[in-house]
Each structure stands twice: as structure tokens, then as C-alpha cells.
Length: 191
Image (cartoon, rainbow, N blue to C red; front, side, top):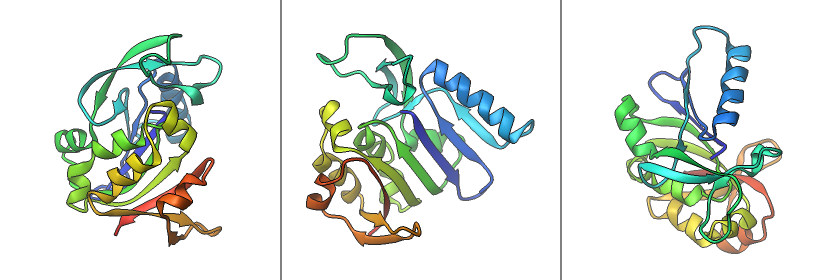
């Protein structure tokens, strides 16, 4: 759950960032202070976003924070830590956030869980756009799949679109084209 950011509609200057791993969170906090200074409207949350509230076991890699991920039983036996977890639906309800203009998700294969945790927002068309990093290998590493990701988005009525070189959403992506991806960013929009 390395990067998950949302911009609420009512106060578009607010940025909500989630990072569950303490060492990476400390770096995030330091960087936000350096870039935005005092009085920033960046709200930092030291927790993961998933499909349930509670705690998760997290596998960490001190040499490469980009490899931190939710631990998978039988696969991850190294450095494990327990982190708190919330859903975007619960977080937004508690924080009084009615809608999200832009949501960025980069959670190392756990994208279906993070998306299912926002199912209420998605069904209500309260998320205008999502930028999602997808990697079939990362999905497989956490016992997920491109089918699960696509279902998590399509069930509440969203579609995945490729980004043109100019950054504008282009053609809609189907399962076949998604399975050909190695590592790419796509945009999810209400279908």
C-alpha cells in the first residue's frame, strides 16, 4: 500500500495520503513538510487501504520500499509487521468526504482489495477518476488476478482505459489487452 492518494471534491486543495509502513511513512511526512511547509492541507494517514477494517500483516523490504506489500500466507516469511487498515468507504464517511475527484492507487497487487473497499463510493459514482498502476505479476504474487481487478471495477460500473501519450484517456481496455501488460498505469472512469 505504497501510494494511495485522494482529492476530495468539496475542498480540492486537500490531499489525503496513506502509507502503512512506519519507515516509509516517516519519509513521506518529511517530504511533505519539505515541499508544502507548515499549514499544509495534506492529511497523512499511517495505515493501509483495503477491503476491510482492522490490521494486516505486511512484508517489508528495507532496501527497496517499492517492494513492501501485504504478506501472503506461505509466501512471505521475512520481515513482517502488523499495520492498521481501513476502507476508503469508512475513511471518507468518518472524514466527511462526500466525493473524490482523483484517486491514485499503487498498492503492489492489492488493487482489487483497495477498490472493493471503495465499493460504496464507486456505486454512487462518487469517484470521478482513478489512476491505477497494474502489474499482472504483482497481482499473481498476492494470489489475485487481472480478472479480479477488472471485476472489482466493473461490478460498480467503472471501466479501464489506456492513457494516450498526452495523458488523455484513450481506448477501453478488455481482459485480453490487460493480460498483455507488464507494468502500466491505466485510468478508471465511470462507464
